[in-house]
Amino acid sequence: MESKKITLDNELKIAFDIRKEVFVKEQDVPLEDEFDDFDTLNGQCEHILVYYNEQPVGTGRIRVFDGFGKLERICILKPYRKFGLGKIIIKALEQIAEKKGATQVKLHGQKQAEGFYKKLGYKTSSNIFMEAGIPHILMVKKLSA
Image (cartoon, rainbow, N blue to C red; front, side, top):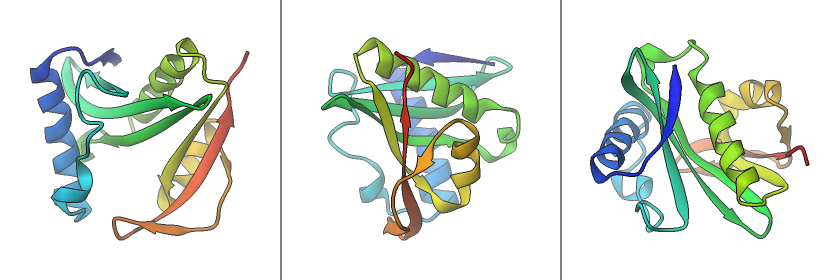
């Protein structure tokens, strides 16, 4: 189990395929809501893949602005959940945030994943709101200096 920063177009396509499987097919997020202008290799985001037995099975991205890292599009293919891969994705994205000088990270977490993020040190910072038809909450975490 390892994570890797995406640097090639074919790796980004794999990340997009994972996101389509999880968010569009499994969770019924409209395709046009899943992808945006940040989904490039040379943009404001850094993307990662997480591997299980050398197979890419999860992804996430991060944008750093105003001293915050914003973790986004975190997902793992259904058969590979419960192997601790989510923790690897979060840790990798937090490390990118720290390298870019962020002192805090935040995310819009699905309400059903709130307990997972709390175990990783995130605090709930909002009431429930809807995003792509799914209940979400804002969660934040201070990074170690």
